[in-house]
Structures are given as C-alpha cells and as structure tokens.
Length: 202
Image 1 (tube, helix red, strand yellow):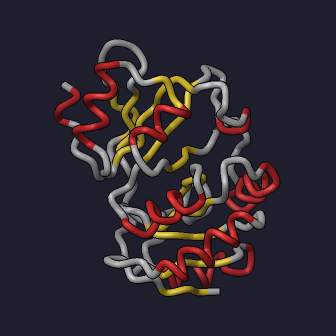
Image 2 (cartoon, helix red, strand yellow):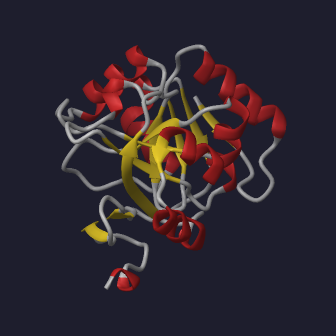
C-alpha cells in the first residue's frame, strides 16, 4: 500500500493513519533525509523480528532508531555535556550517533557494549510520525543487508511492499546513508562515512 504524504506539510490525517498502523504492530517504509527507511515501534518485538527476516540481517547487529527531538534522545540514551553540544549542533541531520543506552531501551536494540544508535533526520514526515506515535521507531535502510539502499518509494513498494504494511511516498530521495559517529568516551569517533560532514570530528 503506497501512501503519498506531502514532504513539506505532512497531512495530519495521513500521519495519524500511519501511526495507527504502527500502533497496531505494523511495519512501514518511510522517507528520511538520506534514503528510505523501514521501521516499526521500538516496543514492537514481533515487528523487529520481522524486519530482521525482511532485511536478512544478523541478530548481532541491533537497529538504530529515530527520536523526535533532543529531549526524547535523553530518555533513551545517556547524553554527556559534550555530547549534548554536538547533538544540538548537528541534529536534525544525516547522522546516526552512538550513545550509551538507558534502561528503558528494549534489549533487542542494545549492543553487547550497552550502546544504541540514534537519529533525528531532517525530514518532516518521519519526525511527525515519531512525534504522533509518542516514542521512537526503528530505522534501517529499505534494502536487503549488503545491497544498495533504495531512494524511490515505487521501487520500495515493488521490492518489499508485500512484506510491509504500508509504504509512505515522500518523493524521490538519494540512495545514501547517514554518517555514524560514536560519542562514547571523551571525543567523537567516526564509524561510517555517509552524507553528514564529519570533518569536525578531527
């Protein structure tokens, strides 16, 4: 099911429809500020298991998730003063930041090192979804593990639509990924070079 939502002014009725799908245990594809993502509620264990199967991804690689704002990040991750300054400067934006997890994060999303990956994409649709839902959603690129991300919602629908409950059409996007930066420790460490500029990491 392909649902077109205006990327500049997301229609509240359609956002509510997608949130109802998420609340009902569904999995959706949605636009971010890099490429299309696949997600469900972070508290939907069966949904997370479905995404692992859909992606053909190893269980030892936890998914990152999207928060709506910095105050929500602070509920799910331990944010030091230096980390907060970095988050405030670069979010919303095309970054995934690795932080120490708090105790409310489901075990499926926490690494062996008790860390999590968190995003706040610069995309009004996915931020509206998370805000309306009231808690974060899983974010992982709309592709099989090891394959190129998909930036065209029609191709997402064609390739994965039968295994998803809905595909949000927010326009054609790039097939790029976010930069991943660890904020564990005293200085930022680049774990993956993506769209976000990481020259500030030194």
